[in-house]
Structures are given as structure tokens and as C-alpha cells.
Length: 328
Image 1: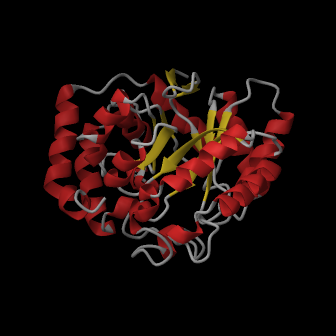
Image 2: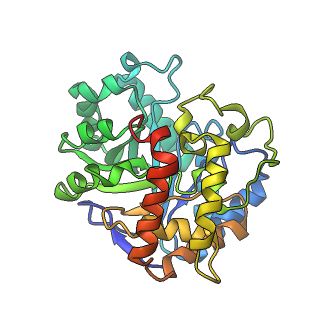
């Protein structure tokens, strides 16, 4: 497993991390033993960065991570969690120091640690990025030992650009994949200039970029790919990257011939993300040991050719950009 610097934190992390949303909830039923085995497989393969959130299964994801790491004898990974989405309603005025401290204290308990490695504001309303007092609250939690570092998880490029104006923001988590290419146009350059780590989420577009979904695929009622197709529960960009399903499947057919012999489309899609050196870590999810092992293979794939990169860019501009580019 290859590693990359995580911004200016001094950490080096595996370039393929573990996204722990799926082992928490909203991806159909995952038995706890299966969830633990998926995470353990990732750790055994060299994964040293785990991303979770306090709302993934109402804390289930954090607690599974705690239990696995209690028995893990290898290098302890960096564990990043998130705070803010427990607010109901989820509004900017809820991002107070008292609320954030309560969320962080709950995550400290769930994860079984005194100090959290990294806490990310969890896709807050855009107005939050224009409230310095929110970021001052995060600074306060560093000062009192609750957290080591803080960052943000964003929906939009504009939010990412605003967030990195705050000197304490060490990382930005953003959707970046073959179907969501806009971050590479400006944001990545600005992040590199400020030595801000970039966490690439939704790397496989909710499974589309594995090449295994089709027009007859069925999803469980508690899977966001069933209940959030049109943004009913949260931002639609989190489900299939916001691309209409049928259009995305047509694009997948155009991508298939570009995948090198012997490589899976999933590994190919992850390797495409790793071609961008501004990316610190990619966080695909996994619901099984086999999926976790398949994800880490991408770290050893050969770099993609410029011809392949251009073909994927042309596909994006032709088929996908009009649906997502200026929306996020």
C-alpha cells in the first residue's frame, strides 16, 4: 500500500482508505461480524486511514471501529469522524460551540478515545462557512484536548474554497470521481498551495463505477440508492454522484473498453482518482472482506495513460457534465 502526506498534519496515510458509511447504515443490511471483517481486511492490507461519522448508523460505525481497533495489534490508523448532521433541523444556527462539543464528546465515547484525530464539519449549510465563530469553536476543542485537527466535508466546490481560507482547516472531504471532475479545475490547486489534505469520497459513484450495476439492479428499502434517488433524505449528489441513473449506465458502457485487461472497473476508477496528486486519500466503502481487498488493489495499478485520461475527460464532457458540473 502506497502512502501520501496528509496535508500539513505530519501524518502519512495509505492512499486507499476505508469509508465506514456502509458498515454503519443506509446501504442495506450489513451484519456486525461482516462489517468488522471488512474493516479488518482493509487494515491487514495496509489501510491506515478510516473515515466515519457520528450519524452513520447513529454511532454504530464508530463503535464497530472502536471494537476492531481494541483487538488490532498493528499500526493504529488515523480515524476521522464528522459532526453536525445530528442537528434536527439541520440548520446553520445549530452549529454552536455547545452543540459541537456535545457531538464530539459523544464520538469520543463511541470511538473509545480521549482525543479524536480529525473531526470534520459534516456538510453544513453553506452559510456556516461564513461564520468564523464556528471555526473558533473547533479551535477551542483543539485547545482543550478534545480533537487534534479539524476539517470540513463539503457538497460544493465553492464551499471548499471558502473553508480553506480558515487557517485551522487541515483537510477537505469532497466528492471526486470520473463522474464528478470539477474539483480538479481550481480547488485542487488552491488546496495544494495551502497544504490542505484532500479526502476523495464517493469514489465509485455509489457502486456505479464498479460496473456491476445495471437497469435491473434492486436496492433494499434502507439503502440510500433506493430512498435518496431524488434527494429526499439528503443532498442528491451523495447518491450516484447526482447523475441520473440511466445516463450513468450509458456512460459506464463507454468506460468499459478503457479498463486494462486484468483490472476491475472499481480499481480502475480508484486509480483514476490517484492520478491527481492533490488527493491525499480515497475512501471507498466496503461491506465485506472481498470488497475491502478489491479496493486496495488500486494502489498497485500502473498509472493510466494520457490517452485514457483524455478519453475519460471527453466522456465526462459529452455525457455527464451538464448534469453535475455547475451544480456542485
